[in-house]
Image 1 (cartoon, rainbow, N blue to C red):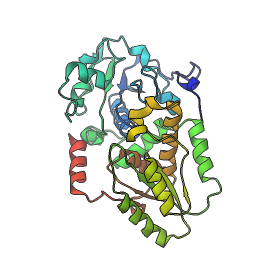
Image 2 (spheres, rainbow, N blue to C red):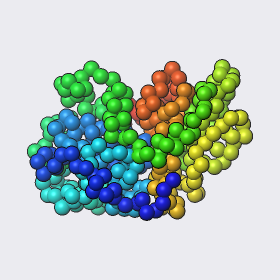
Image 3 (cartoon, rainbow, N blue to C red):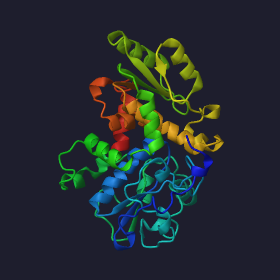
Image 4 (cartoon, helix red, strand yellow):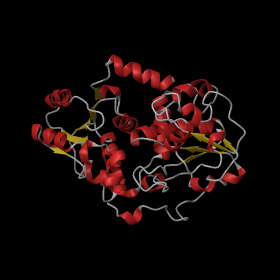
Length: 342
């Protein structure tokens, strides 16, 4: 889809800054983890910026999906803001103050340097982000980072803003994903190619089987149940594991997939990106998977993975057409609740 030459910032003509950050306050949203986590947490940052009258600037220079220092966000999505986060690297008027003068760093860098024993602390993001529940700080540059979406912590502020009051969180997330995460042309063209001349219903199946493993037999059982009801359906499979892909394709007919590399040693894409010949191509392939899932009529998945949750939000797949094999898992539900409100 693309070569290594694409692993660079887009030219200035593509970085059409619509607002001069010198004349307004900005909120830099940093990232960690895979696409689902960084996209959903970025939505929180975008809403937080709008609540505080700031311009949201997404900063994905952390070395995932591309070389460290290269912002891969505008290489993967059409950036509606067009402001280069690098122009703020030496800014000292920053909240939180620990980012002052080192905005080229990323959350893992700051945690490693200042809080080396807190890598797994679910509250560490509060030290690296402006306050979600309080008033917007006066500093010209603010920073937001969280490993997970935190819209629930903004609920009180959102209640008093006509743009968000009374709206379901899923609607808000869909709206922000649509505006700020519209994939670049090659991704959308590839998705269109997958679905071209495909008139029958499609069952989307997402199986994560690297750092987190879901129950493949349970997934297969649910797919069979839908297939019995809709025998003329096709199956789109998105997985990160070659053995799982071969197993599903052997168990079911009319399965189609994205032709992509799979991580070595069972590592997820965002960890193994540096092992690929063309990490940007593989990142775009992952987005093709996500947007293809969003186009499906049914979705069989586990909500433990934010990748498939994000796909469902993008495509507005109703819950009545989703089979979440962990949807009633007490441990998963409790963990999700804690993560949302912590």
